[in-house]
Image 1: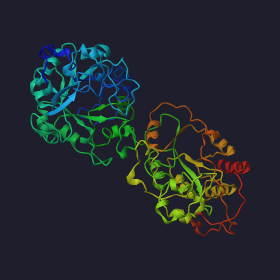
Image 2: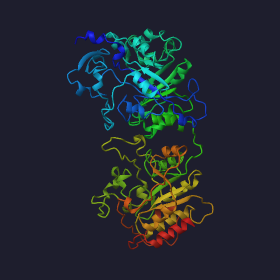
Image 3: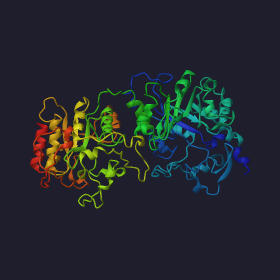
Image 4: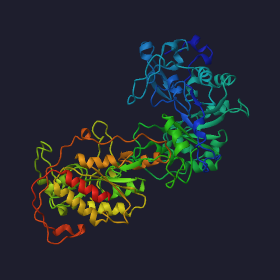
Amino acid sequence: MQDNPSMFGLRASKFLLSVLILIQLLATQLLAQRSKSPWQTLIGEAPPVIARGGFSGLFPDSSVTAYSFVSATIGICFPNVTMYKYSDIEYAYPKRKNSYLLNGVPTQDWFTIAFTSKDLNSVFLIQGILSRSPAFDNTQNVISQVQNISAAFKPAGFWINVQHDGFYAQHNLSMSRFLLSVSKTVIIDYLSSPELNFFRNIGSRFGKTGPKFLFRFLEKDDVEESTNQTYGSLMKNLTFIKTFASGILVPNSYIWPVRDHYLLPHTTVVQDAHKAGLQVYASGFANDIVLAYDYSYDPLAEYLSFMDNGNFSVDGFLSDFPLTASSAVDCFSHLGSNASTEVDFLVISKNGASGDYPGCSDLAYSKAIEDGADIIHCAIQMSSDGIPFCLNSSNLVEGTNILQTPLRNRSATFPEISPHAGLYSFSLTWIEIKTLRPAISHPYSRGYNLFRNPRQRSSGKLVSLYDFLILANSSSSLVGVLISVEKQGIDVVKEVLYAFKEAGYIKEAGISKRVMIQSTNSPINTHVAGAGVSGIITEFPLTAARYKRFMSPLSPHPVFTHANVTEPPLPPVTFRAPPTTIHGPLSTDNRQTRVTPPLLLSALAAMTLASLLYS
């Protein structure tokens, strides 16, 4: 298409030139809490947080609304030179779609250079990432110019990213003249671009008091046009980058590479840049993208790995969710595993660290203790020969690999549990159950395609209640244990009591662990409520334990009631006559089973169990 000469005759400042305006506001409410530990940044100070488009993870990118919800961050005027993805331009100007060469590729879209600032008054910003909520797409989200953002927010500083200087130059628009004009009324603190020619053209025009220049690296295989070199090859010549820039902006994968959703060893990019005298700013952070499994779906853990790893720290973050990044820097960095707790609540790990390992496995329980859980949880199931063990469901299909074993032929149907056939623990002996491997759960695999730590999907081994109690007792950091007991017959209580006695929990002066019992049976549930539990039950205890070391007190966790239970009670377990001698739980393979009429867990048994455990 032919360019419109009159359009390009307008002043460059009248155009939305797709400049990234990054507005940094200081988090004054957090400065007093900032860690005093030395930072491994180039200048030894905490890394600032730069909000990509304001709070663009929630609100439309570059909107005034996105800026107003940023407490320690930075914002942008418009994210790209093309406008379709991030605005409603197709409805405002349906017939003004154009075709231009962009980075050598013919591209059809609505380009910013084809519109005046007056034209854009009727265009509104929208959430451009389809997986994010469009709830905040409205006519308040106008496109703002640099000067408007400066006047409205009076930021502590600006970061301007010039993404397509060569494209503008081809259409007789000078980004250098525009920036020099803006700098007369707006202080520009940082200026970044992925184009070397941009820095060649503007290098000395700001003088010694001008902004810091940062060279922006694109993906490693992308080509920088003026040098015809890939950005990966330019990374090998940081001394050259230092001749015109004081820092670099890189995708976070340059620092922590990821393969198959697992972290590879970190590179030396940060250390090499610091040796060359360059600061390093990392980009590509968002809470709602699939993180490496190493982070256990915790965005805080990702930020901390870039600044609190003992080896290096980046000099700043570019994030779609600036509040998370700011919290990581100002609240959770340099805490250490021995940091004192700031709030009195309990971290209860559901079936161990079951978000990282198969629930109720020995590895899950060990990881929960390592991660700082206060209480570890065991949902008790029973084998046919009366051995209590830990597993989330009596249907072994849900927590083990039984369908891949010869035991898959032992299915049965219990209508009071499910109309479908299952492979139930009370139909197999403990010796048979011990041959199974635990299986990690994937509660969000259907519909969301989110999986948990597939490398460890069958790691570890199942744990008897006795071994669970011994493990808990050997830990100096645990406060206690939480036991889930369902209505499986009076003998379930007897077997649980037996395990507690053998593990030394009953009337032993040396045992200091708290024991809490959870059940759909009212007498038992009364003791849970009476324990005064205030905390959180989680499958990722490391995340909760981290918050416990910093956050202010929380409201008590609501009491567990009948209304919370959706799983029906299990059928009673039957046993043969009791043995004439008592064998320890670790030598139960030759125990005789006994037959008992199916009885519901009585109030008397519940009170007996509670009195023995709490006396």
